[in-house]
Amino acid sequence: MVTSTRPLSEQTWAGNVLLVRTTTPTPGSGDVLSYRPGIDSALSPLIATQMTEYSPIASHDGKWIAWVSNETGRFEVYAASFANPAAGKWPISTAGGNNPRWSYRGDEIFYLDDRSNLVAVRISTLPTFAVQSARILFNASEFTQLAVSRRNYDVAVDDQRFLMVRRGGGARSEQLRTRLSRLRARPTV
Image 1 (cartoon, rainbow, N blue to C red):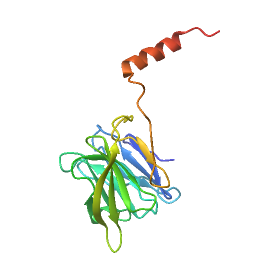
Image 2 (tube, one colour; image 1 turned 45 degrees about the vertical axis):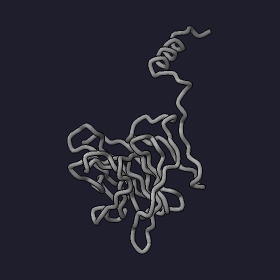
Image 3 (spheres, helix red, strand yellow; image 1 turned 30 degrees about the vertical axis):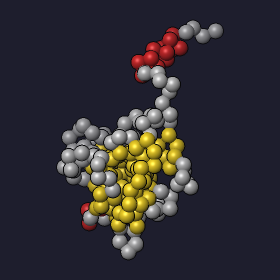
Image 4 (tube, rainbow, N blue to C red; image 1 turned 90 degrees about the horizontal axis):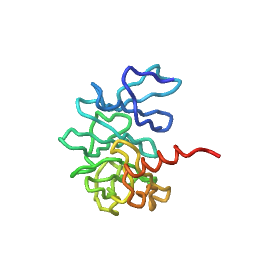
């Protein structure tokens, strides 16, 4: 069992390592912590700065990690070695980004830019990590984005398809709440 004095959010597995993020807006918030069940007795800082970090996601081979940070004054996607993120990081987005995902092949990182475009960034990891090119795949604004720090989509194993939730037929959230309230108020037969 993992316990913390700070509220935790965004849990994801990186092989046998659990990654969590301390929640924002609490003091000391937005740090990425790790925990190895059966090995660690407490959460350990993995990416922890004075800035806010969120959306940690490990590459499928477990060698790399991507996350979002606001160290430049706006949220951008970064990548680093999972074994030692403090040794150096590479910017993946350059004009705002969130919700990074790794391709299953390991040669691309996907993210949503500030205009809700799904962007694919081609990378190489040998002999060293390098960003090669970026391209917009499509505009995802018609799909639901609950929060920039929550997993709002996923990548299929073929790296060609994405699972997203399409926004409802134009219903605003107030209309949806009203409809749900009416449904709950109906007597059961």
